[in-house]
Amino acid sequence: MKSLLQSLVMDITTGETLTDATTTSNVLLDENGQFVDPSQAASNIVSWWEELDIVNKLIEKIPTLILAASLIIIGVLLSKLVAKLITKTMSARGVDPSVYNFIRRIVCAAIKLTFVLSALSMFINVGSVIAAIGAAGVTAGLGLQASVAQFASGIQILMNRPFKTGDFVELNGVSGNVADIRFMNTVIITPDNKRIIIPNSHITSNHIINYTAEGKRRLDLIFSISYSDDITKAKDVIRQTALHNEFILSDPEPQVYVNSHESSSINLIAKIWCSVDKYWDAYHSMQEQVKIALDRNAISIPFNQLDVHVISGK
Image (cartoon, rainbow, N blue to C red):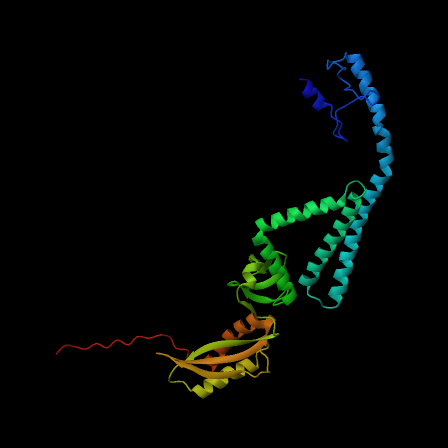
C-alpha cells in the first residue's frame, strides 16, 4: 500500500519520489516509515510544491514556448511560399508537372522538418531524437522493402522520364493518359474514364509503350475489296480519301498497299500519319469516309461467302 501511494505522488519532471525539500524525507511518511496525519501531509505537500516553484518555471518558459510555436508557424508558411515559387518557376520553364510536384513535396517536407526540430531543440536533445528516428527508419525499411522499392521506382521514373503527365501510354497492359506520377504509384485514366493506379515497381520492371513521345503516330487501316474490283482504282480512292481528311498529315504522305489475299477478298492496308491527339478522330473518320468513297466508285467490300455444290446422284 505504501509503495502504491508513493508511486502516485512521483515527481513528473524528475521521476523522484515526492519529498519535502527541507527534510528530504517522504512527505507522506515519517522517519519510522509510518503515515503522517493528514494535516502534516498537506503541509509537507505545500512546502514541496513551493520549493518546486512549478508555476514560476512555467511562466519563465512561456517566451520559449511562444518562440517554438512561432518557428513551427513560420516553417509552415515558408514551405507554402516555397511551394508556390517552385511551381511558378518550373511551370514557366516548361518542366513537367510530375517533376516539379515531386521536388515541391520533398522541399516542403524538408523545410517543415527543419523548423520542427529547431523548435524541439529548445526543450530536448534533438540529436538523440534524430538518432532514434534513424534507427526506427532502418527497422521500418527492413519491414517495408516493397514500399521502399516503390519509392525508388518513382524517383527512377521522374529522373529518366520515360513518360510525363498527359502522355498516352501502355503500362503493365493498361492503356490511357497519365494523370499523375506519385512517389509510390502512377495514376492512369483510360479512354473510357477509368482511374487505374499502378505501383511504380511494376512499371519499371516491364515494357513501357509511350504513344505520345514522338508527336505523331502512324495509323494502319485494313480495307477489303472484291477480287473482281480494280486494285489500282481502289488504292487511289483510299489514298485520295486520306489526303482530304482533316485529321491526316500530308507529310509523310499516305501510302496504300496490297496487304494479303484472303479467301473471299483482297485486303489493302493504308499507312497514314496523324497527330497523337487526333489518333481516334482520324481512325473513326477514315472508317466512315472510305466506306462512302468505295460505294461511290462502285467498289464492293466483300464478306465471307460459302459456295454449296449439289451433286445429284445418278
